[in-house]
Length: 470
Image (tube, rainbow, N blue to C red; front, side):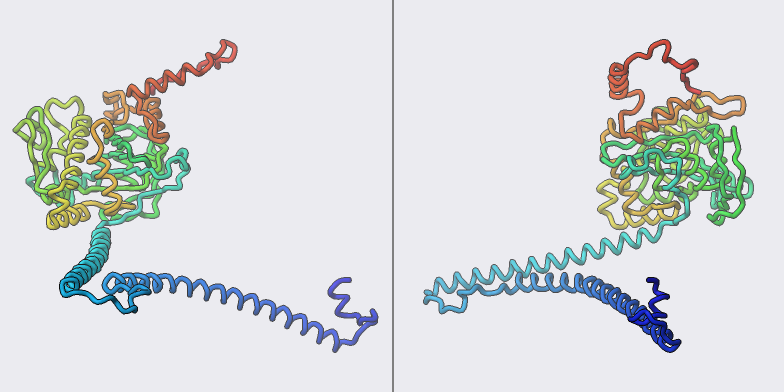
């Protein structure tokens, strides 16, 4: 029998009057309201219980800490302490008083030390929060991109896309690089991808020539002066230089292209404005680089006249990483990439050195200068320490500086041409955390894999199945 039939029939299955029908409808409605009210009341009771548990946890922790400190300073007497002690001689009483006094002093010292540790921890947390607030955050990442390969396998990996911007804003005449009026906008003067795997057993820094020829994806227009994106979409383009990706679409566009090429999940973006770069170097009182022969740039002039280990700072350091027309360099990009890799390592090692870390003034000045000269996404004290410690704490066999494989000579458009097959092998090794191409470990693994494969028959081999770098 349907609910409608029950409303219109008596227990004897006889029709009922309209009054009875209305009353039954009201009863059913009230019953539903009552059930809903009870359900809401039960949910509210559960929420109240969760709130009370949440509040009770810190209260209980504070009470436990207070009780423990009380026990340290004034320990509770044992069950037999109330019993009348046996008579002691004067010498025994003197020894007992001395022992009790030593115990009290020790326990008070422990309590004070615990308090100091607590205060120091709070101070460090506050200092780190203050440092993190100094970093300029800008949208750059897309960690859910479909271009990321084996995303689950990259869990725990840290990939830093480090970009040096060649904006002339704030440049002085002494730097001899032009000003914002003559050279407007901002391009990616330096592009490095630092990969630190989850096991932290190695670090690989891959540099990209700024004149690398790429197919640029469609990107939002980037306003470098304001540090914001516009609603305009810049169409994709082929056979253009890599540094146009940043010039057109800023950090987002460059990150997008890097993830398309590498398949790596870029989870940190660090942009460095070279205009404020020298302040970081000056904050740590300069860095030491090794120079085999004097460095003279046809645009910047004599950069370093000395040879051997040379400590540089200020404008000289800025010229060292910016110089791209150095006499004797095979190309304008590769010599500079080598110098930039050398200098980045020296700077991070100096920043993590004992003299800087233990000197509050130097450390504060460096972090402040770094924060003022940098911008990015998902960067802070913890993230930069991960990168710095990886580059400082590993021996040279575990720290690799590479340049993305290219033909080594510019094409008719003046662009470097990527070797796609070799690049794919390199980035696949980073994704899988396997030996890098060209190393003895890689060749041994490749030979072992070839030995376990069954050679294909002539009938099963597909036609035109050769591969080569392009």
